Image (tube, rainbow, N blue to C red; front, side, top):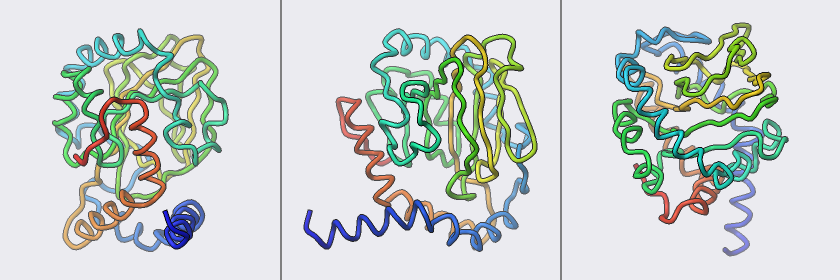
Length: 252
């Protein structure tokens, strides 16, 4: 890598970390107004027809998760995949991630280990990222916001210790609890935080998918998502994912 490439990489890293969310604010207003599902903190799962198939088959996903968890020590920490996120994952080892898709790239080795999960993920339109999100007891993810409103976030509860009141998420001023086999869909660009105050491990299937839009904003959104996918921050995360699989991640 020559000096010019290093300077450009540093520039884009700074842009996406510090200036990115502000430069997108005007565009995000356009995106929200064109949203086919409205602008909310949490969404009604019934507005997304593909959710029913995942909920109806959640135990198949859970069975594959249980196999993955047998070798839990080999599962990377979130911070190992995305070191720039140390603000929200300062407690090493308490948030682990088993990736299937990352920022538009697929991890074939992990998908082959979980064939039912892989099949069900194909039901989600415009999927961008998908992984098992594994939170250790006592883990708190502090308040933060996602980078861009052009995607929405989906969680399917797979392992939720009782009482589930101790395992919660706040999005904006609204709170929800996970339940096994049930879904949550929310806009992560509202400030949100997560608690696992139970004595057990909480696991959800974590998915980011493109927000349904109409007209020109849809084309604009697709272009911006491609730009974010090609940014140095995302490419670094993809390279980090590669370290934990035998094969290089491939474009989905």
